[in-house]
Image (cartoon, rainbow, N blue to C red; front, side):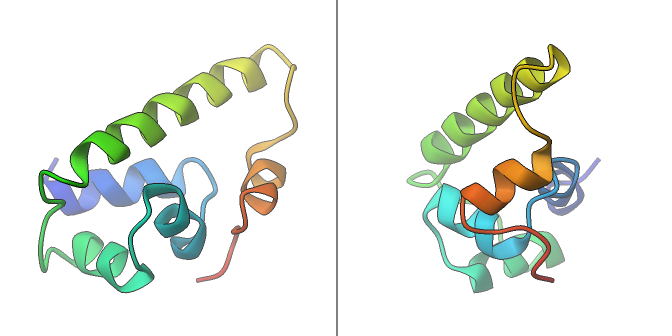
Length: 85
């Protein structure tokens, strides 16, 4: 799977909109759109933050599977996003 599809899959399988994803990774919405369209790829300064966010989201997924957390959409709303696109 190429980078643009992988990045979009990470975001959408967690129910995050572009705005919420951008806030979590601390980039602009426009940059997320460019990543997902293949216009560019995350650069090295962004990669550690991206990896951290993905690790945290994986942990949230695990806790959710144990019925410890609300669903992904509720988490996304709390994080300031959701279905904005």
